[in-house]
Image (cartoon, rainbow, N blue to C red; front, side):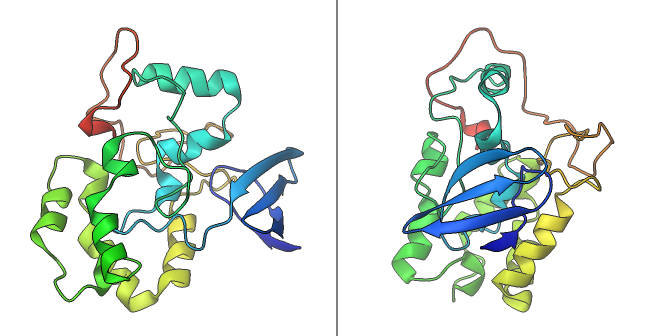
Length: 207
């Protein structure tokens, strides 16, 4: 077994691969989680780190907490979770499930836009400037990816989005859900407004 860190779980994990899945045991919670075994699943083609996405982190919530988080964003729990851009379990919203940026990199057979001869293209710049705070850094992150390589970049991102106590946190999470300490996120989500009831699909601001 290999021992690694996984966003959203405190402590070290042991991974026992079995064909296309692996079972990870969080040693300080005795919780078994089934995760899709996809190389670099947390590296989004656009340069985002999926480990800091609230849809990814919701994959590890207990049922009641998942219901609460989905309701807070006016969504149904079905399809709310995600295991990363390159996984087989994507958030139901079309911007994630049918991402044009990821499709473009797939056609060019490159892992991310930083390796494209047309970088940065108009589509990528539009994504960067769509008003979502966590999209603003993607060009810098893609440039860093080219210089550092995938492994070093993913390690740095894991450290960036992990509290001192070892718990991962998301882009707009202001306090650690494990120890309660303030975390270095982007602050409160400016697009998050109170919802009445649920909507079947996510809005564009939710991706």
